[in-house]
Image (cartoon, rainbow, N blue to C red):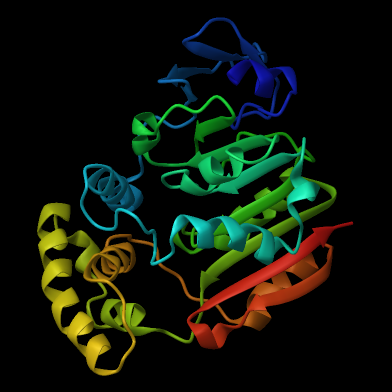
Length: 301
């Protein structure tokens, strides 16, 4: 599959924007002699960053912890595989036929579960990008390309994706507006992009973060125990209010909110403005800010 993305000329050097040469199974080289950067391929994952930024290492810990059987197992953020599969189509407002033989990017793919679910039923070029080294531990699937890279220094050419999905990622970049602009550049004309971000209408997990704004500085092993303790009253309160969420889901979401350094919140009007500034059309609010998150869809002219 690495051969396919290079053959299709999807990748570029994130430092100078030049073409990349694939010389062997271990190294990708920049074709610009003045740049001459080299990028390793580790466990079939082209790698465009030297290490996970300190601000995002909590997610690396989180995904590896989940892979080892901690946090949620059968669900992810409370959603089972059927729900995660169907929400991809609902949020982009497309049908399963629309993605056949298309280039699809999951920007901030985490465990790459959604891409795996899609690849099991559809023939398309599925690509996921994430900062975490946990990508090296992901199950190798021939129909999925995983890229380790930064949304603020995107290693993709302009106008190469038909659909881009980014759920719960941009608000952790430190500059979500710039990351969004980069993604729009990578979107083909008439392509669709859907993003979901935390809203200014904070839910219970966001309120915990407001109370503990510097909690991300705590060592991850200790933070994991803190999340376990905090999950107890939230879980019991949910039972009393008949708002049932599993204990593992609550613990996972708490860690998701408390571990990253960057965790911005946004209003619908603010994010709609981003879409307008990037000349997107057919803009639609799919999930309103009252839910604690904002989901917005747009199409490139």
